[in-house]
Length: 227
Length: 227
Image (cartoon, rainbow over all chains, first blue to last red; front, side):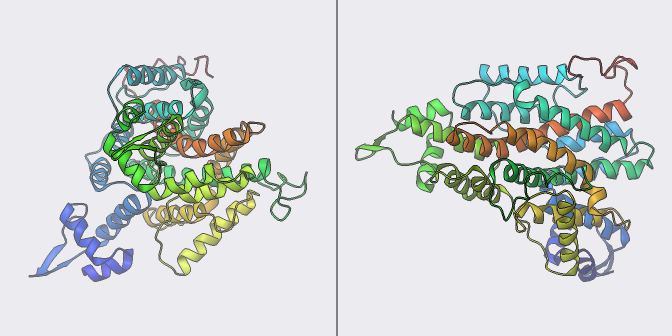
């Protein structure tokens, strides 16, 4: 198909398709004239993936390159693909060096160890979590909460979620599993962010709300089939 | 204190402090000369909060204004503060209008209804989740997963998390509770993002790993005190 049809089928504007081609996120088409090229199904598939990563996942262009390299590299054990993918999509916080950072970083490492989690000691998410711990302390006005009291409960839930998500990939076709892992990591993260906001709003309505038009009668809630 | 000391105590560069002053994220100090002003403890507290929201929470400047307005507005029921806060920090995806979007949006609304969640029908997180659903479909190559199969399990965990987080604020001093809710919503979201990545890495190591230097002997894991 021509670039205009590629754009139409994926909903990505032609100018953006050209940008992705220049950046190497999309392989060149088969040249059919001075200013024309033909694209195939693999371009449609790739473009949909790039679009999902950029527009919905919020992954920067450089990160997308890393994700694509992880997906399309030579066949490797699934676990070896996950690390580079995580690194590509995890923001690396600029942080001040110093004893305060080092102590918080060690505390985060201690939490991960107490959970018996197997993660690379230089996983960027450890820095990300350290930044959050320091930020919570900076705004909490003096009572210095420790990493376990800040994150312990969330860690247990994250573990439960990850076990199911990763477990569902075992036994899948390897190429499909890599895609599933990457897509799950990026898009699943966005999905949880949105769900968490909705759940917060619901919990707040139940706990602090009270406008009768929004709250069901006492005792009437928590009875849906989903419980 | 002077602006230089304000910068020192909070770790925010003077140029950034001036930028926040211009943007109205930080109230003016007490003028003491043509080019000098004096700042108090409330400036230190505010600056730490703004910094945490911007640098760690990734909230855009316009969003920070919304969050501060929610925190510092006239006393209101907690639940009335949460909505504007969520709106200020939730990215609004640009989405194409059309029957495909409308159908996916209705499906997301149906999921939320089946969960018996009380959320505003125009909560921006509903659009966010719709965008993720369409992105998952676009990259999943034809088998059109529905909203419940994509998000059902995550929704249950989000609900569990939110109940504990919001519940911990009941009975707190109102002003503190508002701060806690806002900080929890923004920073807690970042924390969970990092924890989820770490948990993913751990689950992947257990399921797909196998390098003996990283994995404990079979049966040796899951025995730490945290389980």
